[in-house]
Amino acid sequence: MFWDREIEALPRPELEALQLARLLRTVRRVGEHVPFYQTRFREMGLDPASVRTLADVRRLPFTTNADLRASYPDGLVVKGPEQVVRLHTSSGTTGKPKALFFARKDVDEAAELIARCLVMAGASQHDVLQNMMTYGLFTGALVMHYGAEKVGMLVIPAGPGNSERQLMLMQDFGSTVIHTTPSYALYFADFLERKGIDPRKDLRLRTGLIGSEPYTEETRQKIEDALGITVFNSYGLSEMNGPGVAFECSERNGMHIWEDDYLVEVIDPETGEPLPDGETGEMVLTSLSREAMPILRYRTRDITSIHREPCACGRTHARIERITGRSDDMLIIRGANVYPQQVERVLMRFPEVGRNYLIRLEGLDEMIVQVELSGATFDGQLEHLVRLQEQIVEKLRAEIMVRPKIELVAPGSLPVSEGKAKRVVDNRKL
Ligand code: ADP
Ligand code: ZN
Image (tube, rainbow, N blue to C red; front, top):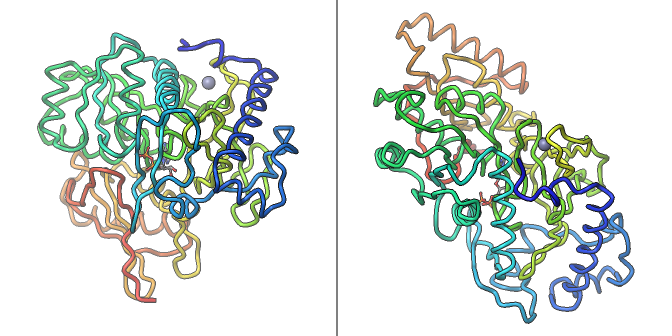
């Protein structure tokens, strides 16, 4: 099932020709209308007219998170005739956020990409989407909302949190699809369990569009089991219009990235050198059809690899692997490099482990992992807990080369945030 078969299954030579035409146009536009890129090109001695092939993308400057912040509020906006109609921001941990501008065409194209993703996940106008992402300045909820309306779905703009109300909406309006983060999906599953609601019998949920933060295959499995739904991994970032950049098809073997709108590279984050297809590194994205605010070679810091072999679903657009983390997520604990995703992968393999965890770093490099137990399997026997604790320590030590302290805690007792989950608290005094 396709939303736009012609573009989704475009033969690769034609897809690449389209990419090239759009890349050249983008480079020309930013060279003419965006002072930030004019300065960069001048500093590098780059004549935009000398960019002629897709491989020439490597000669273009990177754009970083810091560049976006430094150009706040509108230093990267094309000073052209196209009317800017919408502003979004991306959360900053400190100080000013990043401001992202959309022209009319950008709003439409973002909705178009979401429509492709939704139909790819089997959704249609007969579905009811409960959109549990944060509305407001973030892209996550609004961009999905517009795309789902385009498909003709009934959209419930529920927003995040308030599980009682979420449940009521699901029951009263028969929601079949939810859009949320993995952490809230698991939290909500716990909530249903405590209420004695069996989603398979009592609700009509069928599909989860789950993204906006990294999660493992093991976590996907937990969400599917707990909610009785099929989970599709959904990837996006505000700098590239928000959700709808890459999304899983029915094969659920990597996420198709819409290459007519995004030129994707994977680089070595240390050297900045491009890596061959299939190798893992940092993903770099160039927007090919954004009008208001085109971005060249954006350093996403997201770690993945790219695959261009044909997909059984018939789409020709490349696939990226599940994001395993961000290059800036990496923790250094007693000299070892540790990604929170590695910890999650180990924990979620234990059936006794519940749905939330928190990594705490204390004192002089001490690692403590707080782990929620699962309500269903916990029998309250101390010896079982001690054995479980030991098993988790051993499995984690083998994976991350650090021996953590494990604290088992009651189901639902760790904090849950409405937006992205906070997996690490670093209180070290190093
Ligand atoms: P949004 O508001 O859509 O979440 P942000 O720009 O705030 O957009 O965050 C984008 C970042 O979120 C990405 O760069 C990536 O690190 C993370 N992210 C989004 N979706 C996924 C996903 N499916 N898997 C892993 N990480 C994701
Ligand atoms: Zn596919």
